[in-house]
Image (cartoon, rainbow, N blue to C red; front, side, top):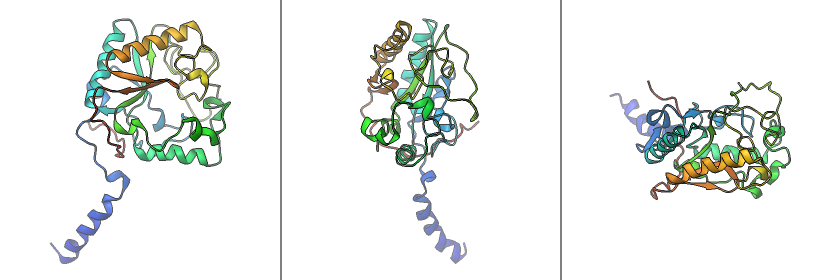
Length: 253
């Protein structure tokens, strides 16, 4: 090996270690579709259809990754719901820490491209105070998933484009964005008190759907978050406490 190459290799290796994309995927992190391909996926942060209005850093593919134990538990939830005529649809799973930082930056920068849909009654400068963004997220530990429930009464999913007219996420079920899920009272990532799991400002049907989802998730070790009906963390593996930053890349064929 030429001297110059031998000299540059250690330097190049050291440089790459500081590149965000250089972090490898840990062995315990798996693609959900390899565990249960029947669970629907609409990974919002890989697209611009989310509260920031742009794809988040680290989302190089619209894929759900979770710890293997969490993914298997979610597959059991899917099986239980299927027996009742329902199913799961995930919006977000593992979230690289760089994406969490991207959210935080958005909260401090000018511009509200999708405010009318996701936070029509909230000022973005209040995101930190209200807990809508944070410096660390359990999503980055591979234990947390954002999801909804499909079922016989769900309206077909619309195809989102940047030209779509934003509609308030708290609008009646038939009027707001059709995500392919049953009525849960609000859309996903709706920054509003009506998105609180136990809100009494939603219809009886929506409340029943939330309770069905919460029961099924709890049965397999997922704990909900009171301020977001869609947010659940797998709690049966205490070792899931490492914040990760590897990018979400396409599943290899």
